[in-house]
Length: 107
Image (cartoon, rainbow, N blue to C red; front, side, top):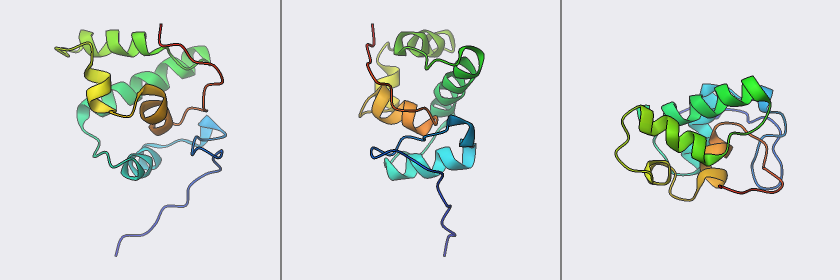
């Protein structure tokens, strides 16, 4: 039987309250809750989101993640939505350990 990971504090929608509590093991657990098996393409997006957040203390807009994936060879602008079918904010940002954005535009 697999041990259950104790999750850090989250808001009512399951987003981390403190993004500093994120880890790759936590990302796997959060992805499992979303029925996503993380592939290297998922990790490319997640690590980019985390890196950009660390640099600027702002969650990157989806267009930057789309551009990053394209630079890595993604053939479709919709790749982020293929990886995270319920959306960038709902799944990608949550799995990457971001807080829930208050107002959001994917520009």
